[in-house]
Every structure is written in C-alpha cells, then in structure tokens.
Amino acid sequence: MDAGEYLETAVRDVLTAADPNVDAQVGYAALLLAVSGALDEADRLVAQWLARTERPVGALAADPVRARAWAMLFEARGSRPEWAEGLPPLDLDAEERAHAVSLRRPVSDLEGVLPPGPIAEVVKHVAPSRPDRVRTALLDGDLAGWAALAGPHPDVATLAATRALAPALVAGADPLGLRDWAPACAGAVIAAMHERYPPALGTWPELIAEIRRLRGGSPAPPPASEAAIRSAELRLGADLPDDHREFLRTCDGLPADVVFPRLLGTADLRAENGVVVLADPAILLLSAGHVVEVDPVLGTTVHPSFRAALVKHATLLAQAAR
Image 1 (cartoon, rainbow, N blue to C red):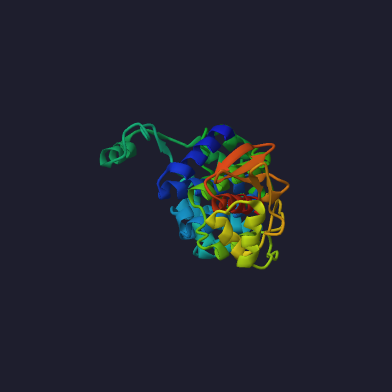
Image 2: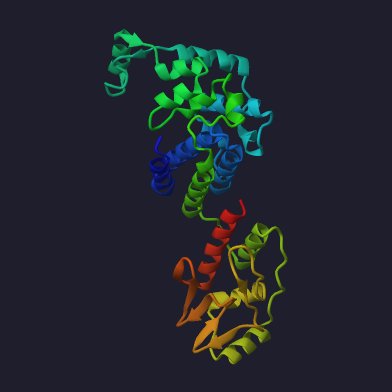
C-alpha cells in the first residue's frame, strides 16, 4: 500500500468527514498499526479517540470481522488493553470456525461489477466463482503472499481475525513493512483528532488544571493579587487584556514545559519598545492588543487572544505527552 497516500486520506477524513466515517478511519488505522506490530501505537490512537469523542468503543468494531480481529489479537498478546473493556467477550472457538468458513468462500466473477442491491446478490450467486487468492493465502499462513495480493487498501481486519496468524502479527511479523512508519501514522491521526475535537477547557481554572494534568501534576504559582496586577500595568505603562488578567488571577505565571516557555508572572512582566514580553525566553509578546508567538522553527503566529495561545499550547502538550 502507498502509506503516504493512505495517511493523507485518513487525516482528511478525520478532519472533515461525518462522525461514522471518522470512526471507520480510526478503527482501520488502529488495526493497521496492530498488524504491523505497533500495538502501543494502536492503543494510543484508540485511547485518544475515546478521550476526544466519548463515543462507545464498539463503534471501532462495528462489524463481526473487526470485532473478531481484536479478539484474536487480544488472545495473542495475552491481555486486553484498558480501552477494550467496552468490547464484549467473544467465543473464540466459534469465531475461528466462522472465520474459516468466510476464508473459504469463493468469489463470484461478477462480485463488485454490479451496484449493490438485490439483483447484484442474485446474479453473484449464480455467476461462475473462483477461490479468493487473498483469503487462500491467509488459510495457507502465507503472510508474504497475502501482502503481495492485498492491494492498496489491505483488509487488515480479515488478516488479524485469522487466529493462526495473530501471534505472528503481535510478535512483529509486519507483513506490510509499516512498523517504522507507525509512530508517524498514529501521531498524524491523533493530531487531526485534536484539531477536530478540541478539549472543552471551559474556565481559566479548568484550562490551567488541564495544563497541569498534562504536565504530570506539576504545581502552579498561586494567584496574583489585584494590587500586583495593577502595579505591573503601571510599570509597563499599558493595560493588560482581560483574559491575561484572568490568567494572572488564576496563577501568577507558569513554569516552562516541553513545548512552551516560562510564562511570566506580574513581578517579571516587562515592556520593550512598546511591546510587552509575556514569556522567557521572549517568544510570546503582547503588541497592539495581539498576542504574537515567535518560533525560530515554525515562524510567527498571531493569536487572537492570550487564552487562544494557551489553548493551542494545551493541544500541543497533549500530543507531546502521549
């Protein structure tokens, strides 16, 4: 498969498609990562989807083959990840028998030729048929043969649902050769989910609490007093925006973390040539009512407000923390 083309489509769907299509893309991506031996990345992706959408995890295994695939992978890895608690347990012996029947089902020469509907079903069953070479490869345990025949959108659910092959997949057989690409895939889809489903961070205390949680519970300075805020404004020769004042009333600055500099408290705020420096190093500035972020790698970003800059920071921090 063309990994780059697939990922472009997946990210576009996560950003713009209807929710059921998002669920389908995330479910497929998670299984694609799992059959590549990237179980941690698959777990990370599903956990993020659950946190962002709060939809039932069964939406990722909405058809019997996907549900069977996850069940076989769980058995092979010897445990069920925390996110899978919402999936019902299956009778694996019965599922294995049902899967063997489906793998042996011949393919009609007219399958896929006619549009779906009653006529297509009738014609399909009376038309000449042949063994499905892709499924036959799975019956034979031929992972390399399956990969060669699987096409641009491999049926990874049917692969993972093949009980005899699940242990090899969990052990890292990686028939599609995607293991090194898996972290980039998971990261890109998660980033798209963060953009589509931003966290509801609500009040300033909730936003700061979320940032602290993402930092591992690191403490925040106590709130600044009204006197301290007004003293800073007099020293700066400028009024601070209302949302920045609300930030200072919640915590008087914040220490640096892996994706953001130290946010200055009232005692350390300073003005240079009419620009108020909000961070150390001075990459976050207040100029003419706008909050400007100057990044030596990503360039300059103008945020509509100080709060918008911190919400963006929380999003980046969430991505870096997982």
